[in-house]
Image 1 (tube, rainbow, N blue to C red):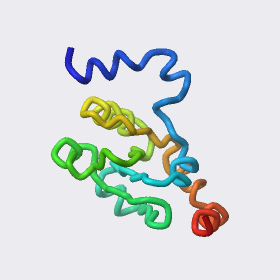
Image 2 (cartoon, rainbow, N blue to C red):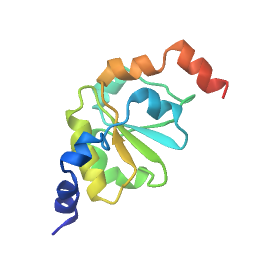
Image 3 (cartoon, rainbow, N blue to C red):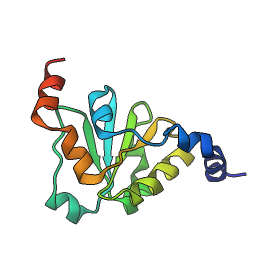
Length: 129
């Protein structure tokens, strides 16, 4: 059995029922030792930027480049995978898990979820911790 098959076999009803694959943007950005992996296409990133330096490190690696640039993604941080709708995030989440990334989560909610998490009051709280 290869690593991808092992990861998929772990994803049973209990796994999804407990939400172990997701982490909402607000909780993710309030956490320490995180990196947001933005896997949107370059054109999307150029149109809508997320300068989140007050919250976390951001890596912009389009979905199709992740396999070639996987060494840029740290294994010692919580990796939150983000895309505009969630489909690509699921693909890269499973891919990273199959490559030994155990602390990886999908950031659900697309643009709306991320924007809600960076409102001024939440930024103020983060900066004053």
